[in-house]
Amino acid sequence: MFNLIQVGTDPLIRLKRALFPALAAALSIIVFYVTSVAAQARPLSLNDVRELLKGGVSPNRITQVIEEHGVVFELDEASLRRLTQDGANESVLLALRRASDRYLDERQRQRRQQEEDARKRREESDKKQQEDSRRLQEEKRKNAEIEQQRQEVARKVKEDADRKRLDELKKQEAEKKKAEAERQKADDARKSAENAKRKQQEDQRRAEEEAKKRDADEQKRRDEIKRRTDEDNRQRTEQERQKLEQQRKQKDEADRKAAQAQKQRDDEKRQKAETERQRSEEEKKRKADNDKRAQDAKRKALEKQQLEDIKRPSEDERQKTENKSTETKSSESQKAGESNQEIKDIRRRLLR
Image (tube, rainbow, N blue to C red; front, side):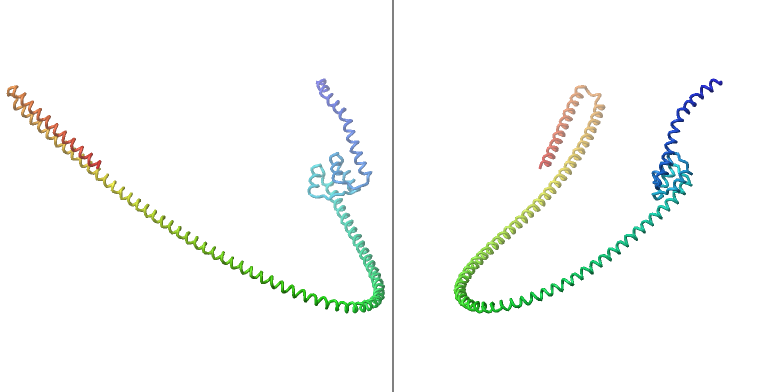
């Protein structure tokens, strides 16, 4: 038994000896990571905290590192769920909440500081812009005064030049009026000639327009006559078509009524023939019944006669029998002929 226990425990010992270096290396890596994080003296990110939790660092040490260095993330629901899944306990989460609140307060303080700095920069910029605007307005005012003086000098120079130019213009105006009078005279003559020519052209154009108008009116009148003729032809064609359509309808209606009347007559003939045939068949049946009853009566009378004449000589009996047989055959032949004649009469009536 001791040997079995010893044999069973040897693999465990060998496994422990094999795993010990790996555990020692992992522990040294975790210690190095924690040491490096602590040595960097920077706030922890979410990934840093998750690496510490996954690396097996104790919650107290993680809490200490968080308290010392703080964090650079906001502890929201998603981060809280991830950290809980990685194994963070309540003390770590509480430390993270405090550190996250400090981080948020610090970020708000920095944002307010940035806003304050931006406001100061805006105020300085506005002040600088106002100073530049005031200086620019002053320079504009000085430039305006210089420009006014320059314009005053230019105005005086211009007035002198204008006075000289006015004298020159008056002289040129007089010459111009003289030339204008001459030109006006020439223009009047030219206009008179042009007016005469224009009047002649206008009269010719008016005559041509009147001729064109007369031609157009004549063509319009001819077109109107043609249109009316076409309209009359179309109306007559339409009336003839309607008349033919009405005649066709009347003919169709007459044919339909004639067909109905013919059909009614045929039905009456067929009914009459059927009635005649039924009556003939009934008459023939009645005659056949009467003939049969007559034959039965004759046969019974013959049998009775035969019974009465049974004692008569055989020759007389045979003679009578032959006579009766001959009478019977002739009677039957006569009845058959009458029946055939009736059938022929019925067929003739049906065919008619």
